Amino acid sequence: MDQLFPNVAISVVKVLEGLGHQVDYPEGQTCCGQPAFNSGYWKEARDVAARFLDVFADAETIVCPSGSCTTMIREFYFDLFRDTADFKASAGVAAKTFEFTEFLARKLNVVDLGARFPGRVVWHDACHGLRGLCLKEEPRRLLRAVRGLDLLEMKESETCCGFGGTFSIKFPNISTAMDDVKVGSIEECGADYVASADSSCLMQIGGLLEKRGSKVKTIHIAEILASR
Image (cartoon, rainbow, N blue to C red; front, side, top):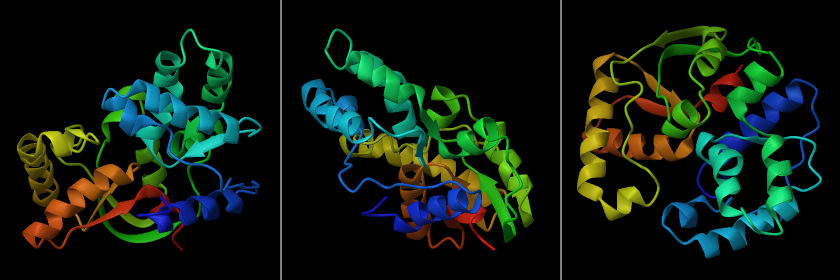
């Protein structure tokens, strides 16, 4: 977020503070460890994840604008820290970690944030959010409450965009072919924007949209919900 999509992080803060919450952004935080974990480098991932546990040990609630990071912490930390001294700490952090739309719609039971965003928006179901966290209706409920927004559905909403972290680097031809299917479905539905809760997916999709010269723009749901 801080390196590639700072506006998303700023939007998350605006939304949460607008609801009356105090937001703390620990400057000492780094990665959750997922890239190394997914690539099979569990020792290196464990070192990075252990820092995450230390930095967020005293947090009351942890909110991630990313389904993939949330799934890593909530699901895969159990594998990463099993039979280690940090297992109890990892379980404690996992219990208080929420994906952004999940936190709003499920935890707070808030869907109408007073947002206004004119345009036709289609939703991309990111793999970790959909399959790992079972989030499908929550982001759609939030978007339907946005004034002026016309929520569309594409045929391939649940199809992977082909990013998969290092998968897109190791298998670029397969990754691009998957992205081609996704982008074709986005353009077919006539949307002005494709939205998601994972910036990594939007980076993958946006790259091919730009290469095609498409007029469709990518946007994180936090940016929409913070819009007035």
